[in-house]
Length: 164
Image (tube, rainbow, N blue to C red):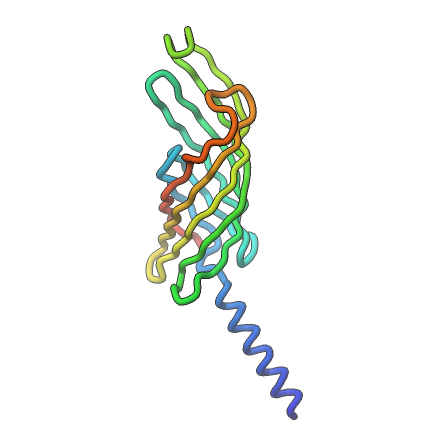
């Protein structure tokens, strides 16, 4: 009899602790409003692990780029705040650069690879199908694009519609 109560108590504690780490959504689609502005799709593959796929565009006077990429993010609960998690991870992106006119002595283009890290906060509203996240994404550029080496000024505020 005592063994059954002990097993029941253990199962109850385990179930409650698993609920603390469960995500409130499985996938979400929306925008990464940052550097660069991108369309984003985030899919959880486990309670803590998610992949984010994105495609974006940025243009300045004389040059611009299009990028596509993916990141793995590992989420951790923040105790005391329902729906708020912090995450870290990494990924890669391909950047297609284009240069116009006198900036590069004529029209030209180039491609580079970006190896990314990510550190951020993720919040899911309890009563609405909305997810917000804020992250910092340092990138190490490889190739002959406009940038080479480490750049730390990337990141975004993301707003997404959550899907169950």
